[in-house]
Amino acid sequence: MCPAPNRRIMLGELLVKAGVVSEDQLKTALTEQKKWGGRLGSLLVEMGFLNEKTLIKALSRQLGLARVDFDGLVLADEALKKLDAEFCDRHQVLPLSFDAEKNQLVVGMADPRNLGLVDEIGFRTGCRVHVAIAGEKALAQMIRLKYNLPEADSGTGFSGEDLGRRTTSIEEISLPKAAAAEQNHGLTEQVRTLLRMQQKQIQVMRVLVELLVEKGYITRKEYRDHVERQGESG
Image (cartoon, rainbow, N blue to C red; front, side):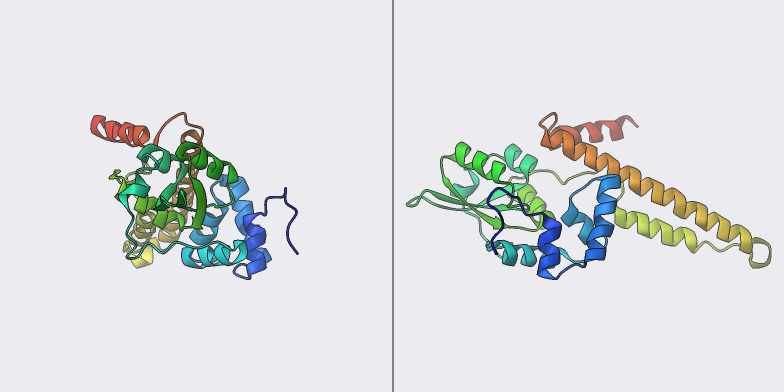
């Protein structure tokens, strides 16, 4: 049965229907999203419920759209020139190919359900726009590569992977066994609590920056330049 034409199908509903996440996993991710924000698909991937390739395959199958595989994909300059770097970076969209005879532009998007963005691309380019689904991380990396943009910076100086490595190194500190067993346990728990709080703060900051960029108050370049100036002054 086809969905009602005016109803936008929710991502979680699609993924449950596709059988790639369970109802319980979706509820857990939605709870985290309400607390800290962020995109549902990214949260599901970060929480280990599925990987990005599985996410994109499921969406491609459920929405009946092509998916983008950037491995070995050659993008023509004619297509890339249809949209400028700032627009692509802000909206996370990338021109993939252009058929001049049909006046048809194919673009890669992480969220192809964003029909407002599709309409804006058509208005900006004067082209008939066709959408293909791309993984969020792979898409962001390809946008930076094709438009020669600097690497994205969360402004923290270290990544989530770094947090995991730091936790491991702290837990491996060796204290005198007889005298400090209880102290070691307490210290480890305190460190874990602090790291969890720090991770949540980082997530909140990322959400705020994404919101400011999405609303057009700042660009990603302005934010990165600000972070670099702060680092130099520190």
